[in-house]
Every structure is written in structure tokens, then in C-alpha cells.
Length: 219
Image 1: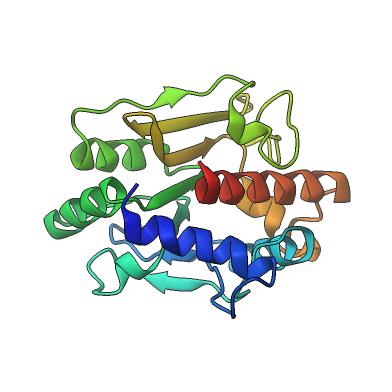
Image 2: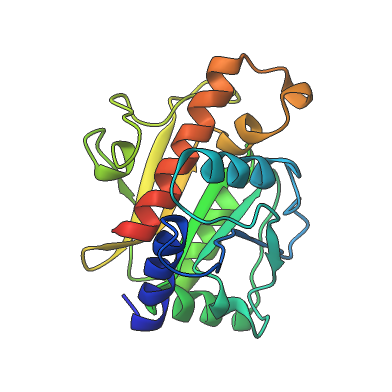
């Protein structure tokens, strides 16, 4: 992992343990082109960040950041997030910047909000034509790093009726991106009044979100 980003992640954990002065962790949502609703589930990330703050030692800024892949401060964020229902399209500059960001130590969580799968896979193939997504077994650390999910990703919404799957993209042994497919974690993170999901479903989605962040910070 890039030493600068690795140091930032270590500081984030130490801050939560009150060993260092405040420097809070947040999640940066990617503002992409192509017509898809990159802004979907607006209450999801603030709720997840608050849950992380309340249940872990990570020092958190509960307000999400929003970035374009061409923004100069992209590399100041250790964890980026992408979601939506529709088309995703990266420019050539965005393709190059995302590749560099991930190879230098950044982490991407992509959350299928139903309908983004084809365009997301297409664009990521432009970013890493030499890499393939790997279906993660249920015993992978990301499902057990903080909370235990013996059956893998929780199913929040039915959508296409397919089982939820978690996919990883790797640079050597390091996972650089995690793709939650047919699960819709972001809907589970939303305010309870938005989708009226049972509290057990919302809790499972939030706990899985903790696992993804914790894994990204500690792998």
C-alpha cells in the first residue's frame, strides 16, 4: 500500500483510540457522468458513518465528501464510494486517475443500487483491462473482520431476485475494490422511513458497511 495512505489509515484508527489528536475518516462519493444517479440514497453514507462512529474506534466525520475523479484532492481520500441505478461513464482522464488512485493505495466500494452493473463493469474494464473481478467466498476476511456474516452479503432488496454476491478486484494480494452486487447495502443504510425495511435488515446492512470500511483500513 502507498505509505502516505497507509499512514492516514493508521492515524484514523489511533485517533479513534484517543492516542492522537483529531483527524476524522469520511467516505467520498464519486460524482460521475453518463446520466446515472450518482447521488442516489442521499441519507445512506451519513447514516453509515454515524454507525461506524458509534460502534467502532474509528474517528469519523459523519458528512460524506463528494468528488469527481478529476478533482485535485482525490488522493486526500482513502476510501471512495460509487452507486446508482443507471449508466456510468468515465472520461479518459477519469479512467487514468482512478487506476492511479487504486494502485497507489486507495480503496473503492461499488454498491449496485440495481441497474448499474453492466455500465460499471464496462468502465472498470477500461480502468483495469488486465484484471478480473473475483467472487469472494463466504470465509473471506471482509465478511468476518468486525462482524461475522457466515453467508456473505445480506440481501436488502430483491430487485432481480438473484443472490447477493461480493466481488473483489486485486492488485497482488491487496483488494483495491469491493463490489456489492444484488445486495443494495445503500438502501439499507438509508433512513428507515425511506424504504420501510425491517430493522433487522437495516442493522445487517450497516454492520456489513462497518466490515467493508474496517477491512479497507486494516488489510
